[in-house]
Image (cartoon, rainbow, N blue to C red; front, side, top):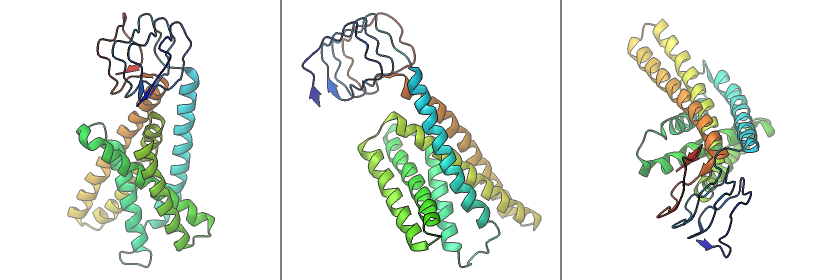
Length: 265
């Protein structure tokens, strides 16, 4: 935890600055523009926030949307290149092990991002890391394989690197913009798995294997709901990234005189 020598930020333009984890006990922010600032985990005991301007900044909204769109396109392309070719692959076929790995990565990624806001806080960090790791593994596998002309060894290496990088980054540098990317990727992987499950369910229902057909249909609908929730979390994540954040900050005896807009406390 670092300590700031200067405690007077009165009437200053501080938009989009990060004060995350800093010791700002007794700091004077009166009249300052703190839109887009990140005060998460900061010590703000006795700080003065009278007359501050809080809320979102336009450039942060645009950047958040760019990150979300890029992640969606990247993940959607990977899903299209894997889900459709896997349909009709016989159980136990030569590519079956890869299909199982595909389903597992899609399932963990989609489920993790879709339930993160409805589980107990003690588990949310773990689920977040697992979802990010699964997304990184899936994307690394697909694009490394494509770059190496579908060489399976290179694809597996890419999956390993992608998963490890995402796990490390989410554990070491948990941030609001990473949450946007993870939710965006989870929405697409969840939808890809829902589509795969629905297609397989139809084949079972057509063959009058009702138990499997109904079971997979229900699972497909579950992942569709998780997909919708991940999309909602993506939009909320962009708003949080663009706004002022006081998550887990120490605001003991802090002074403020008005309701804060677009502020995460």
